[in-house]
Image (tube, rainbow, N blue to C red; front, side, top):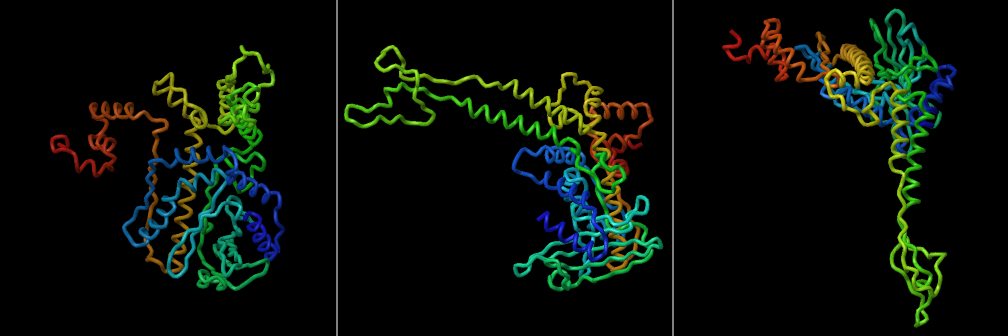
Length: 434
């Protein structure tokens, strides 16, 4: 499938007359294949899932605004929010993910594409002025069709979206795939300020090419260490298998009986003792061999390498190893999770920028395609800070502030109940409110 994606994108580049950046494509494919590998313990996937879960847990992301446009954009953003954890995990695992809205038959749809399906063709500073996408792949009558898009943002704000369908290296009409029949081959939009797609980038620094637009996986540069960890786990499994208990049986039990038939011993892991002496009665018929396994030494070896990987990634203990909470003070706990929180916070900032860009793209497409009347909207983000906050300490600070008169009672109620401050003020008991 990865090869098919690259072939389709190269066909598009040839059509555009652009030379592909082979090295960048190879890196993207390698990142994606490593993240998708399920044949062994996948540390990139483990870290990506863990960080993404912490980042989006208990998050509230809403679109504010009392009008039809805000409702439309709110519904579109909610589709992203509903799948935000796997989207964030994939961005961390492969380096980046594209969120691209598109319209057909008066409805707004969402494409979630990993960066192997994106080629950046032109940049103006931080803005991508031209990009190509493998937007969709469909099977019709046993043949594979690819839908490719080219987005171009001119300096004067004119935005062009070109769409083409390809099959086996040849251009075909879009209506060859029934679900693409209503798509325009080309669309021009004016007064556009930024690309009509958004890119969620993994916050890990690309030390190989710092100016590259695309990101790198969260475990970038740790491939050798991860291979060593997987090998250490394999050694543990081999040793446990090799040192499985077995029974050594006297050779006399394998000889023929008085009836001339060979005796058959039941069960597995029964072996003939080579040092057995026939006719010596004081030799036991059976001896159990069950050696000790170097369990603790092996666990220590794996944990040491896992702790090195945590340091290399930039997270604290507790992501891959056990969290040491012997010093359980609030200050110590905050310090023990600060590095992880720094990575989580950077990912949240990227998520906010991505969803803001996605909402803008939905807004422009809604105007052009007359999906809903114009109206104001605003994205609101409320993230959980349980990773570094002590809830008992925070509540005590609020309580003391209320007693001193520097914190309003409704703020304390809002903290306890999760209500917004206005609702909490309305729900306060009369005596407290007065």
